[in-house]
Length: 156
Image 1 (tube, helix red, strand yellow):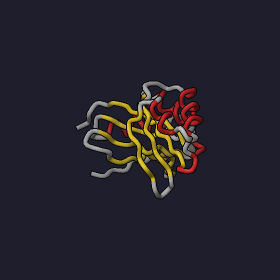
Image 2 (cartoon, helix red, strand yellow):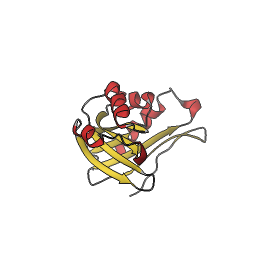
Image 3 (cartoon, rainbow, N blue to C red):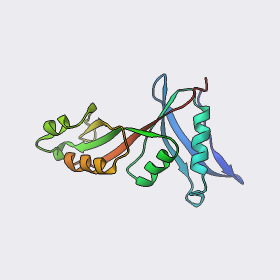
């Protein structure tokens, strides 16, 4: 079943969570959009809480974008960092790329031919922006984001 949830105020759509099925146990929350004039009123948190009560899975995963405000939002709402997603242009790969990978727990590596990039997933068990910045510098990545997860009670 496909469902769409929106928050309206006097006929104005002011917020929406959006996501998609990842697998049998996980939903990927792709984002929460709230009109700017409604920011900082708890609308995003309420949309997230509502979304969590309506999904029929036991885990929600979200990529946080490369923004500390967004990271803090998900941390505040009970999400925990589980990995970094980093994107590196083929022509920006460090000469000692394989050696650098050996210094981290690489969970997965994908090749994005269309964007001429490598996507690495590196395990992390904590929120550590110093580590995030180190990874970005070490790998010359143009994007380094947290992937966060939250286990929820099944609503099945």
